[in-house]
Image 1 (cartoon, rainbow, N blue to C red):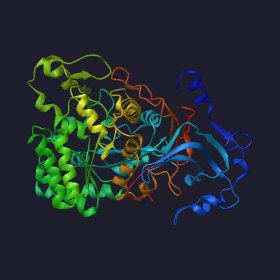
Image 2 (spheres, rainbow, N blue to C red):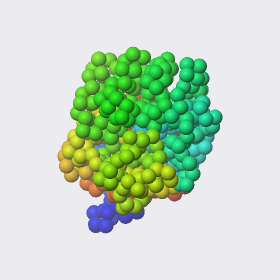
Image 3 (cartoon, rainbow, N blue to C red):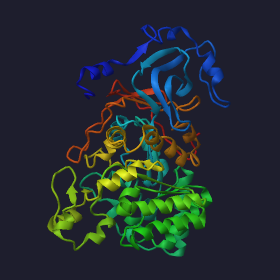
Image 4 (cartoon, rainbow, N blue to C red):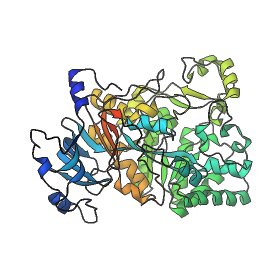
Length: 519
């Protein structure tokens, strides 16, 4: 992948891992001779220093602009890594078996994506080039959990994990089969969105059974409970409330795609889940506020902030695009039936320039597949992106079978390149916080390992992104959704380089499962 064709870009590409046999000049010219004794002593109580006095680190990142959103550190520092952990962030000279020259580059915690449907190696590699070190499927989730986790072991360039899927457990109960990861359905095969279980009602006895299935998924390591309420219109408000009660009893967060606006309107859909969180005490995360609220975003964010100020554990997220995407056969499009050619013209058949009309809408509904949904305003989109308490999450669609939407490849670089550098809509530090510490804090209450992620501090996991703030940008478009981002020079996943000198490192799969039991 070409990062930059300019002379400066070639110099940036030339920066790389240097071994201890390769001396270098300048400020850190004696770094090879200095041990980590000082840094090990400086590590906070309880942190694993990873290197005893007299030893050198596995890797040092030298002279970068180190940014840690939790402590708000923004300064030139050296970072030392050993055995997958950060052992020092220091102004002192440090020694390492390998080094990265980070002069002119930002060194930050790896990005954490709470809403990554692309749970496959192809999608993960594109996300790595976008700066992501942990990609979690929290909205729809998976069912069963243990089987899905086992299927991904040893094939993941970055960390992965998922919630227990309420739609998946519902399908198991009403239709008797396991949907697995429902959004990974290959083209031409029926998706779980087509089955009658989506519309079926559940009685009181079945409700107990459903919660039993979900509880088993939590025991298997599910990171909470994932709801796609708009995709399961058969789920009554009572049913959703009962599952919230289970979430509260288990201390499990509820990650919710709210009801469609045909079920009480946009405001009513937000009010339903906020009221459930208040009444039960369940932690709540509302996914893609931008697409769920659209032009009501200012009001719905006011509601979320008001609930938070009154003690409700509630968060939300957005992705930086004005178009969404989902499967056309899903229940989300039921209210679109009987529309006009002009209304259907907002829909683009994925991977093509084709805009739909009444005839093609009906045809593709029967066939099944992905569409891109255009029509939101950029003014509102930018306002949402700029809000410091709205987490960045991609809602990325899988790239395993086809390229559908650019957000799975370009979300994080788009925020940093377009909204931070070019538009000045928010500061670099605030943007990084929305990508690192905020999502880590959302998850860590139920998955303790996340308390070591989203930070760039001694004792934290060495999930680190090193990027060029002057060149980082997304290249994925609706016409070319799989174009990789530019400007991520290095990506470490627990100390292992997945991206080096702007290129993917072949054959490395250091990603591990993030589960509720992961320490």
